Length: 60
Image (cartoon, rainbow, N blue to C red; front, top):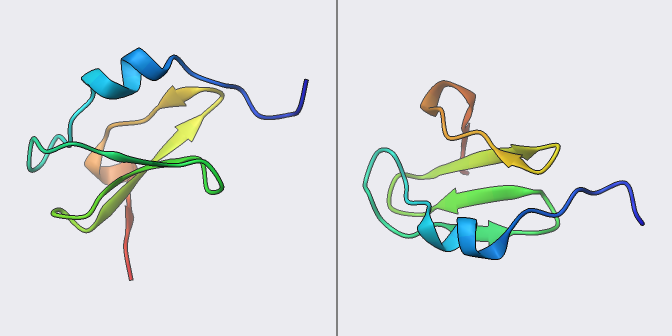
């Protein structure tokens, strides 16, 4: 198994952006959940999405 930890895809489908309440896009390469409407990317650490705005990365 690789160093990446997978998370449950059904859990991903249930998650929405905490700012806009819209669907998130999974970026496997960066291990992030992206909210284009909010212009934020939420990190996934050890297979756990961190859905805190303070932890999110602003998109370019």
